[in-house]
Image (spheres, one colour):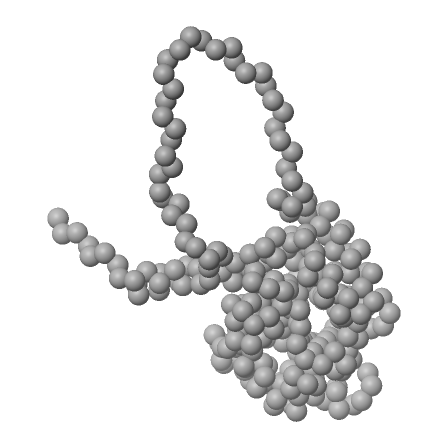
Length: 270
């Protein structure tokens, strides 16, 4: 029987990347297969009276995330009290109700001009965004820059954010609970920016913000009303740049959406 050769370091790294392991969560490696030295058995002695039961120690508040309903209520209350974007960012920086905060490198709040008439919202940061602390700076971000540049926009004339401000480990899909916990923050962010046009990038952002269960193929290119409670903002879903990188044949439809956005912006106040 011929044994297979041991994988090389390059092959191991490729395997980890394929599995979604692309960053370290600690400075030093931990050998979780190492055996823990057990204490030597004590010599046999006379029977000892069994210890009385002791109540389990209470869990410290910071050791576990609060229950989802408590975290959602806390997020709603915190977001509601934020008078400015700067205050909202500080509240989110100190918010402990979402477990994603403890696995991400940093908060990815927003990029661009908060006075812009148009706001783009994606789903969650990726690896590059987690490193730089800015949304859409990786490959999909470069494509987004080209997309908005095609209609005369850039990061000084647009505002860009995500529904989830912390990167999920391994770029996994955020859970419904994580999305609901973070939802009050992006809703308040939209209220404070108060754009004339809201563009939801991809299916998760569209379904979360526009309260629809339809897929992006049915919603893209259709105008929706987004109600902030103070005014109605016109909202248009379109494809996420990451999806267009995987399926470039849909760039033609994305271009149609961009032209519709440019037409509305050219009309002035909406």
